[in-house]
Length: 170
Image (cartoon, rainbow, N blue to C red; front, side, top):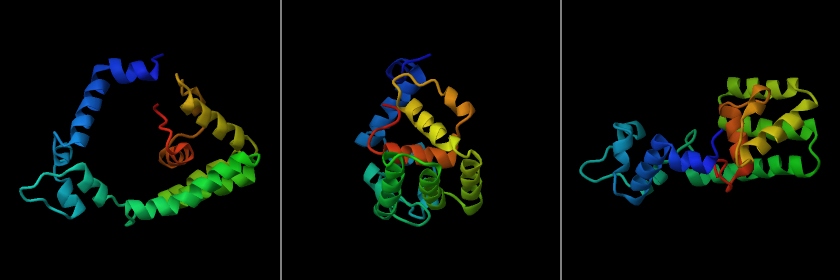
């Protein structure tokens, strides 16, 4: 098992990526270089000028909402998720909080499937969720919990939202 700091610093592909990303953030490398054609995808072709990280920030959109709008929408969802845990998590409280995140961040069919999975876990959903969250926060996560707990596009949103401002990777 690899300690996360060792992984970030000693695995060549990862340390190279971190270095590359730092160059993008600093502006040494144009942000447009890491996704050729993304300016057309965003509907904002650039002529001559390089894309900077600020341009990407200003171009952020999730389901048509800006980063500021998404942040505003996510605050009550984050609060509901944290309160569901802080008040003594019950399946009903946690499932209601999960549903809010799924409905916000997923297409309706995927949101329903993730929510139904949570409901199908019955009383176990609280332990599964808390165990998964605790595993992600560990210094040396094993990820074994994800043999039983869910880790997919919906649940990564939930874990990230719960952990907000405390990067899961350290």
